[in-house]
Image (cartoon, rainbow, N blue to C red):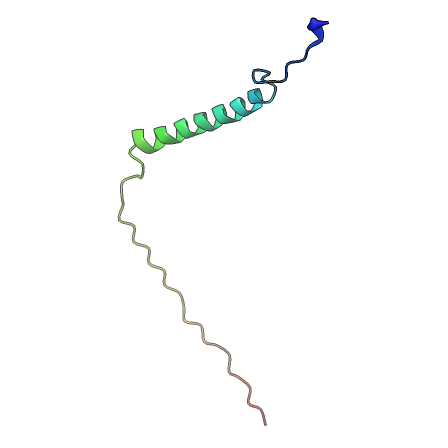
Length: 67
């Protein structure tokens, strides 16, 4: 009879494997992100970019008068 005892206390580990997988994935993603931010210096060198856009002037149509 003692063999049929179902211990549902800590140590069953049913749901903790899924949580450990999710947490492990988050840790891997954060490690990759930290590598690109810190090892490569974060932002790239600033460059002088001068964009000049010359657009033709557009006039609004005349408003009709009310008589």
